[in-house]
Length: 291
Image (cartoon, rainbow, N blue to C red; front, side, top):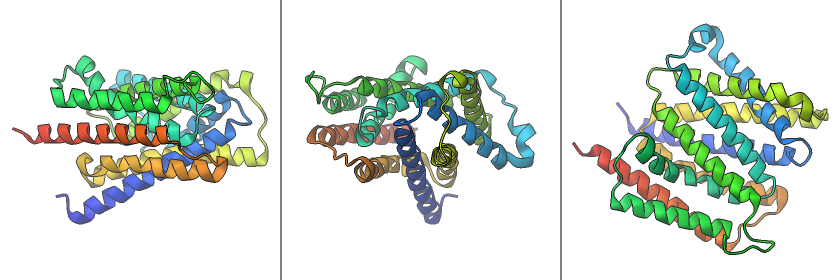
């Protein structure tokens, strides 16, 4: 039975999830000023893998076996691609802007569910999808080709939102694996692939660099563990909307470290994207409650 206490706990876990993920994003953006894209992405997965192994503990042999290895492999590739694209994007885009564009993922999930899962989407949710895409175009300033206009970084982030939506669609198709199995697979696969190409992009980190590289993996793993706890404590309809709190932490982090202040286009576009995402989410919840 889901009690009020459980709902509160679930919300707190989701807020903690967003803090962990924005901490991860901030560390990666900072490291990318000194180290290569491959090295930073490798650290995120490698040290997350080590932590995931420790979390699994004596249950590791059982949790390392998947009932859906093909879907797990696909999810791993999609998450690794999302991480690489996101890292490439935030190299030239403020963190708050990058986080805002990534809010397109829930909207893209609805769009992809039509093609991949064969779900029916009515006129109201189509209106929400169009509103969200309009907000993304405003954030990216597609009409402006000047210094403040469309950048490759924004395109990388939009691609990352798409692969992240595909990752979520693949996650929906998992039925029998433990969340820890999924965590282990995604972290280990990313670590394996990036380790193969790492020697060509390696720069010996400083002591501070090592500390931040390790911290990125810990933050990523903790974020996924908090996310698991959030959905175990309360229904998705309760906790999912609080994922939008990440824009607050991203804005604060960007201002404190890089003195980035979101402009009016980012604020207006973010409001449209978040509003669209919440509307689609609530609409899907209401439809799910119908017999």
